[in-house]
Each structure stands twice: as C-alpha cells, then as structure tokens.
Length: 139
Ligand SMILES: *[C@@H]1O[C@H](CO)[C@@H](O)[C@H](O)[C@H]1NC(C)=O
Ligand SMILES: *[C@@H]1O[C@H](CO)[C@@H](O)[C@H](O)[C@H]1NC(C)=O
Ligand SMILES: *[C@@H]1O[C@H](CO)[C@@H](O)[C@H](O)[C@H]1NC(C)=O
Image 1 (cartoon, rainbow, N blue to C red):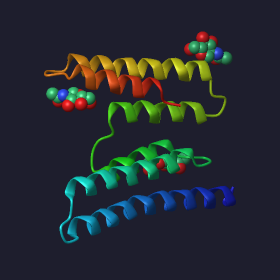
Image 2 (tube, helix red, strand yellow):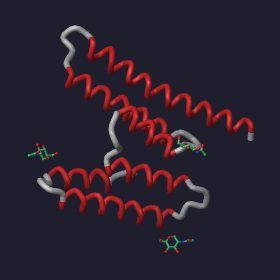
Image 3 (cartoon, rainbow, N blue to C red):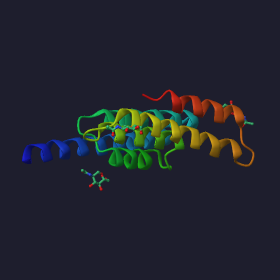
Image 4 (tube, rainbow, N blue to C red):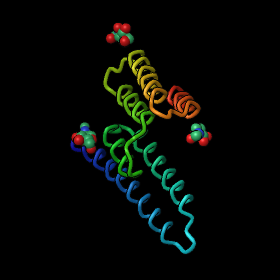
C-alpha cells in the first residue's frame, strides 16, 4: 500500500510538473524578441494536450486530477469533448468496469454535447459536426 501511494504521488508530481513546464515554455515563448503569439498559443495547447494524454494513460491514472491539471494548464474550462473523454476514461478504468455501459454513456455524452452545440445562439454547424465526430472517435 505504501508503495502504491508512493507511485501515485510520483505520477501526480510528474503530471503537475508537465503542466508547469508548459507554462514556463509559454512564458519564454511570449517574452522572446519578435514573439509570434499565435504560435506560442498553439505550442502551449499542444504541450498541455500531451501532458493530459500522458496523465490519463498512466497506470492508476486519477482522471479528475488529470482533467483539473489540463484545465489549469490551458487556463480554460475543458471543452465538452474533453469532458466526455475524461468521463469515458474514468468509467473504463473503474474496477469491474462494464464496457458496454461506458460505451453507451460516452455516446450519450457526445450526443448531448452536440445538441448543446447546435442549439446555441449563432451555432456554427460545421464546427459542431466536427466536434461531434472527434467526440465519437475517442478511444
Ligand atoms: C484524484 O484527484 C482529485 C483532484 O486532484 C483528488 O481530490 C482525489 O483525492 C484524487 N483521488 C485519488 C484516489 O487519489
Ligand atoms: C452493463 O451495462 C449494460 C448497458 O447499460 C446493461 O444492460 C448490463 O446489464 C450491464 N451488465 C452488467 C453485468 O452490469
Ligand atoms: C465554423 O467552424 C469551422 C470548423 O471549425 C471553421 O473553419 C469556420 O471558420 C467557422 N465559421 C465561423 C463563421 O466561425
């Protein structure tokens, strides 16, 4: 048990380090001479996304921890698509996970997100459709 706690602590420390590395890299990018802000933002998003993937695919990953680290890394709320992925991951890694239940919950999550997207004022249908297809293709 002690050893497992130690491994979890290591995993948490690594995830947190990754998020703060993304922030440090972003600060360096933005304060560089002739900084290209759009490029810095894209690099930071990619950095946070890699850290999130590393976090959620780690053994004994704590999905709610990974999701909150990702939100603080990007400085924004998770998108509905990210939320569906996080819920799906939490469901699948639970002890005695019922995969058919997880798959059907995930499909419902994507479909709710799509409905919210397309009924929003000024909805961009092609954006909603592409988000929906990214959501449904999550593994
Ligand atoms: C998972 O992370 C959340 C948020 O950081 C924390 O409150 C919770 O105690 C963690 N759960 C485990 C089992 O470590
Ligand atoms: C698994 O989930 C499906 C769909 O929700 C349900 O029909 C089935 O009874 C569940 N199986 C078990 C063993 O709980
Ligand atoms: C709608 O979304 C698409 C796909 O994300 C994007 O390329 C396009 O610029 C958006 N259109 C508007 C008006 O925001």
